[in-house]
Image (cartoon, rainbow, N blue to C red):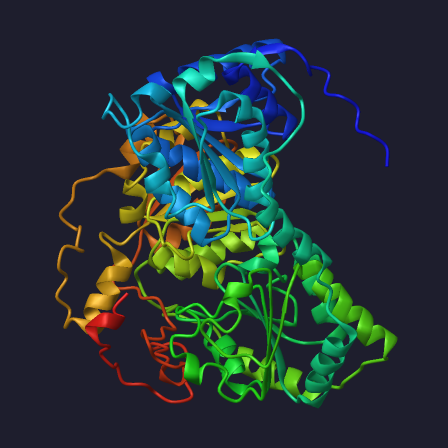
Length: 605
């Protein structure tokens, strides 16, 4: 094996800050999101000098606050598959990133958050802007490094990127004291920390192919099935396995449902796509799960929003298989009959190779016809004759113009579910949402990060009036950097999803969720932040014209839509309930019209 060429800067004398920035460049970082402060100034100065010397090769994007920075890094990572980077100061700078770090951990998103820290001699003294970052972040990040030995700085930064992107991706936090940043030493140009346990696990994952006997067991069960179904989760996208899944499903002719995080793993317009399942999944998707006799779970974790009642989930399935990269997910919620832990593309290729070598073919045309009937009979629908603007109609119009090719980010709430239900997604990494954490305020900064990651894609933030308030300051970030981000606020004057739950489960008592008396003028706010196109849409007849103007406007555009305040998200499966208990509302047919069942307090949200 040939030795790699030595780094051109190996042996050079550098400060710790310069070493860190050089490693970022070596790792392929071309965009940093961050907010400065005293404890991180040496690194900020190094980034400035690096960009002077290298013609702005690593621009530093400054948001309104540090939470925005880390969500931008996450949006960048979600849209590109690369590691996103946030650079913040100590104390409040670091603690403002806790939510996006946890959000990224929950959704398996690779980011590296670099925090300044007080000098090593001051740690533990309650110095100005000191926070116990390792203690705080240790509970929410994939890994945290407090760098107190400057000679290990270089290796630690490289290791942080390795851990963030490998295995089940996730956030890694680097806590860098100011004296470590100012230290001077010799740049090695190579080397990582010795983390033998982690690397052994990664090596086992890479080497773990599906054994021949396991393939035989898998296909014996699949071959006996009459109604097989693939249940694909976010692990398919995070593991870069969408092409493998598409090939697998197409060749074997197995229909696919996806989780919220798995949207885009298959083309939603493909005949095999049964779209999203779960609490707010399509009725036809949920009925397909109920009807299947063989379930193949790929990169999914039987989340409570999917399997609210695990015992009744896929209750007719005689065989359940589970492929995942994380052994802890196997049998955690739902017992399965067959499992494999390894890299998803390799596992799917191995299974498909076995099928080809053994001439595996089955005629599931009757099951396909059944799925087609489910899609037709239980299709998504709403009150199309209403005089009020229905949010679904607005999304359908945007979707008609974008054709499933735009990157869609969202806040969290009703608008998030409407977007998941009514948009098409032709490719992976076009749907960016806070899934597990459900973080309001995610959509706008994530859109900024996504636009930097995919400069030639249209990026649209579908937001709610309550959710966008959380990080409204990032409107200015959009215009400061001349980004063509489109922002839609579906305004129903309140916390829409909370109001829906209050109407269903709390006798309509809208405790602290009605914002109809608030005086926020979103259009004026957008104009104040530099949006040249900022329009309020409040007449149904104007929807096609205004939406077309909005989408075709060159540059940043803001559209506030005054929607029916009583529009709901349906279907809906109550917490702890089975798909047979699904509430489909007035406009989507149901196998059995279900009365609302009030869950126990412990099950709420």
